[in-house]
Image 1 (cartoon, helix red, strand yellow):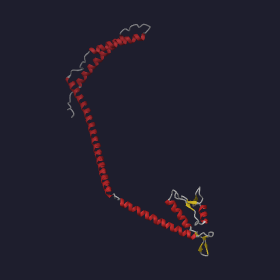
Image 2 (cartoon, one colour):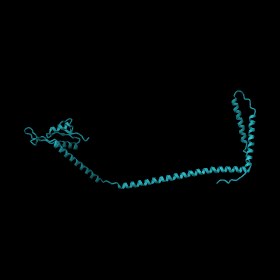
Image 3 (tube, rainbow, N blue to C red):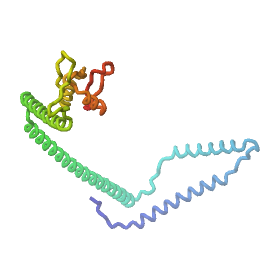
Image 4 (spheres, helix red, strand yellow):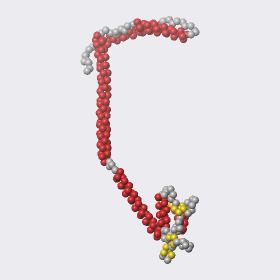
Length: 264
C-alpha cells in the first residue's frame, strides 16, 4: 500500500534547508581559504619530494583526527521537514519492495510453468513405459517353444530332401553321361577287354560308375579319397578326366586317382 499524500506547504522548510546548506558551504570555503593561505615551509633543495610527502601525511593525519572527534549534526530540526523526508524514504522503500515482490511473483510463475511441463513429460514417459511393458508381455506370450522332437523331425525332413535332390542329380548325370559318353560297342554289344589265354574277360564300367565311385570315396572317406584304377576302368575315360582337371593322380602312386575338391 502507498502512504497517504498530504498537501503540506514545504516552501518554508525548503528555504530553511537551503539556508543551512549555504551556511555550511561558506564554512567549508573559509577552511579551504585558510589552508591555502598558510605559509609553506621552505623545503631544502635536496630530498624535496620526500619532505613534501611527509608534510601531506601530517596534514591528512590531523584532519583525520579532527573528523574522528566530531559527531554528526542534524541538518535541520524542523518536524515538518523530518516528516516529509521520512515519508519520501518510506515511499522509496515501498517502491523497491514492490519491484522485489513483482520479481518474486514472476519467478514463482515461471517455476510453476516449468513444474507443470516436467510433470507432463513424466506422465508421457510413464505412459510410454507402460505401453512397452504391455508389448513385451504380448510378444512373450506369442513366442513358440520348439521342442527337441520337432527340431529333430525338421532335420530328418531336410536330410530326406537333400538325399532326394542328390538322387535326382545323380540320375540326371547318369543319363547325360550315358547319352554322350557311352562305352565302346562292337556290333551293338559292349566290348570286353580280352586277356591272354587262361584269364577271364573284364567288363568295362561306364563313366557314370567311375564318377560315382569317386564321389562316394570323397564323401565317405575324405581323409583318403583316392580310388585305385582297376582293369574295368576304360583308359580313354581316365585320360579325359585327367585332361580336363576333373580328377587328380596321387603324387606317389599314379595308379590311384581322386576327384578334384570342387566344393572347397
